[in-house]
Image (tube, rainbow, N blue to C red; front, side, top):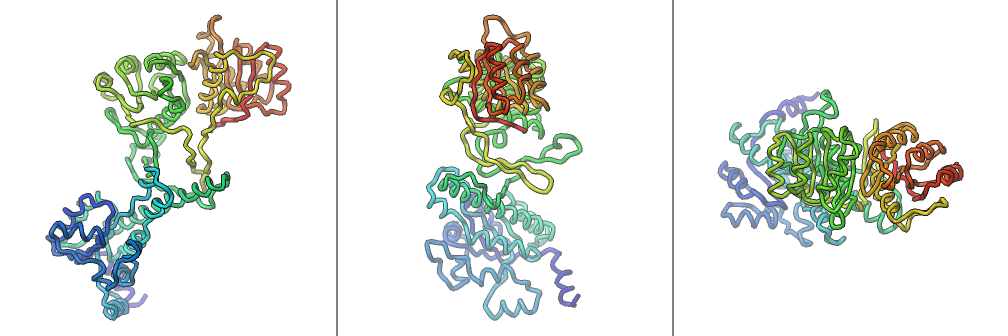
Length: 538
């Protein structure tokens, strides 16, 4: 190692003085107070366009970046920071004699602190802006400067979040206007994550535009995911696993974005189950019906719809009250007092709902450990976003299962024709089956589940479990239907269901032995309909 290289390596990992700061922010919240604090510590301020004007209006001395580069801002602001003077100031190793000579020759000055946040691309997309407006919110100069400063974090501090303004000021005060290496390194890592998430949002948005334009199901050549830490969690599925919740900038209403009103901190399993529960109830339009789902270990143990929320909860609980103990309850309408009172009579971990009125909140508050999550709205079950699951060495990515069956999609394949009540319950049961781990069998009547068989290795075992759960809830006056998330490979599964007294069954169809299955249904005088759509859920 040369003497100069050794000096460079040795000298950079110590506190670095901040004498000059370049500030260019889209979100100007708190920037005046921050700039004023820098000014009081005799740090020179350089800025761009609107940010420079904003700082100047606060009567703070600020040098416009054009005065530094000698080149004006052009093309409606598209070109303003892309200049060697800026990147030389950010990337130079001032202790390197060759770098120092180049800086002197080209009239460059060292920039010790970069403060940048980017154009609000994700927010623009989320607001439903047109294509051209979204493209204009793709930041170019900002990410380039951030990456340059982060690369040179041995000498430069980079800030991308206003939450770190106070931390930096505290560090400057504690270290005589210097920033410790550990903080510079941490902020550099955060900066790269910030630009990576930003680029991921743009990449996935463009992939979606291409897919919609070409009406193709081809997956993009690259799939990128980025998320911001929302909360560290006590542990993962088990105490020996670390875990945290990360928030996608394009996240819709749901468990990830919900506001926790009260109760103990959420666990990994609480959030996972709350997500499963809320996704299920959002299948039901709150303007048409109230819906309730009770989830345990990511599987529903009771789902129902009714005119009133209290009724929906009671019907859902009736399906499997033992399994509902310690479960997650999701509602598609604002929580009201009668429903809240009924829920508090059983042990519940989490309630997740679009909103809750004051009377309901007061009742829930009496159960100090009960978590109440408010989403602010219902999720769009028709969303065509991609979902991702990690595996060893890679990721599995697929489009969201937003398949939806209506009455006109049903194909009656048996001699016995369904009644309208049976059709309604079959559609309800098939919708619920979509959210049950495969193999899934769902029994339902009058808009409520009465038996659910989930996650078994054979479909006949799922049928037996569902039949057992439903046994004490059947009466001769009821019409019972069953739904299967996938076809029956053999007639034995259908025969098991037939023995339990159901009148109609809905399933995708498509098995090699469909003719045998249909014959078995006819022999049992059952109605059977095919949907031609499978809903495996693993």
